[in-house]
Amino acid sequence: MRTISRRVAGFGTTIFVEINNLALQHGAVNLGQGAPDFDGPPEVLGAAVKAINSALNQYAPGIGLLAAREAIAQHAERFYGQKLNPQSEVLVTAGATEGVFAAILGLTDPGDEVIVFEPVYDTYVPDMVMAGVTPRYVPLRGDDWTFDPDELAKAFNPRSRAIIVNTPHNPTGKVYSRAELQAIAALCEKHDVIAITDEVYEHILYDDAIHTRLATLPGMQDRTVTISTLGKTFSVTGWKIGWALGSAALVNAVNQAHQFITYAVASPLQAAATTALNLPAEFFENLQKSFQAKRDVIFNALKNAGFKVFKPQGSYFIMVDWRGVAPKRVEDDVQFAQWLIREVGVACIPPSAFYQESDKHLGKFLARFAVCKKDETLAEAAERLAKLGKY
Ligand SMILES: Cc1ncc(COP(=O)(O)O)c(C=O)c1O
Image (cartoon, rainbow, N blue to C red; front, top):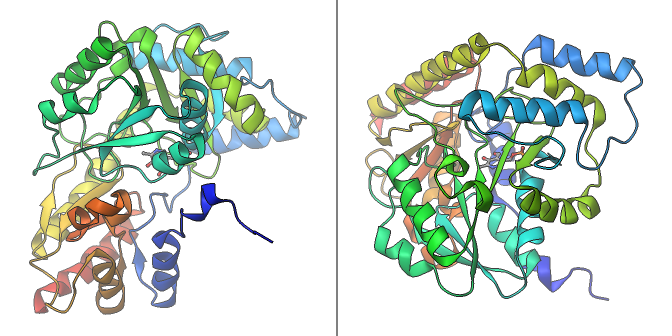
């Protein structure tokens, strides 16, 4: 008996589980997974409890509770001036993860190509494999993780159906500039390609970084599906409430897939999403201030420990090159992550998982640290990292 399909057999198991287990075993401060170790705003948590106690416990409409769709549309207008009809241009999904998968399934055909930037968030390519679609990789290079415009232009071809743009970017912390997004938009228009954006870190921005929504650039409104989530902004990653926004035609296509993947998403949590998305400006300002302080603590700790640190402009993450820090016997990013847990008691993620097989070497000397942790967790990590000088 064959116990696994050929479609999924090649996915392997993620290294993240192994790292988490090792971190637990050694009592390491875990800066691996991109999940906060603190809770979301009490009024948002309270709204979910209230919804459960108000008998909002049966299926929501497949496209989402109207109140949630309205709040999502209002949020898009408030922060980006994007006008969306909550009846037809907003779809509630089971997190951004399902949003991206449903977008790929709903918008591409087997044999199509989808362009992604590498390092690439680890769900996109398995999504494509399941959809029978071929990924076409464009590398992000240099200290600011930029792409070569000619290389990007060459990636577009008659089989290109979509491009996925994740900004702010996991794992690098890059925030795509307006000029970069304009270059992407021009190619999408020229080759009649759809853009799928993953903007889950839209509110986690550092220094003077500005998040530009690709859908709001001229010509992009009708060819972009914008995907985001409640999880990261409101520190409720376990809720898996996400959304896909776009023209009625594109959202309808995403929903064609969504209706048979999840059908509908947790009703009481959607109700709480309306409270979250309507929080006053102060919440979003404080979020940025608090994350700026968190990033600075770990950025300085890593820098002082001797790492080459890539200063992130956004996201939960900081990337480093560890070559100046680890002893010679540490040969790659996985060994580095294991070594750091055992010797220093801090866990990070080995980023080769974000590269295709033939490009794994590009992630070999990198490590990704998450800063979405309590101040005391970060202080403890910083103290442990300070001991690194001895190596
Ligand atoms: C780039 C990116 N997209 C999507 C997700 C997952 O979002 P959700 O939990 O809403 O599915 C993550 C979580 O780490 C992420 O980093």
